[in-house]
Image (cartoon, rainbow, N blue to C red; front, side, top):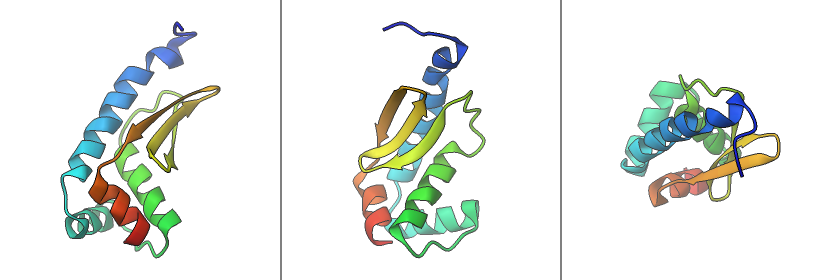
Length: 101
């Protein structure tokens, strides 16, 4: 499979930036993660869906997405553009935070 257009060519820098932010969050305890997200995202999530959205928002904050979108997937953060998608996995603490806060 080859890149179809410039959007496909931008996937690598987008994925690398998102992955770096995921790695940063994955190194935190659940308490540190909750504090970091509360200060960066400025929301108080009460549900699993809200916590997942906060993670996605935190890892894409200030990333030039170049046509790619990000959403939570049961395995991590899914980057999508048309028919193409890629899931970047998250650490155990991030997954546990989403499930139970």
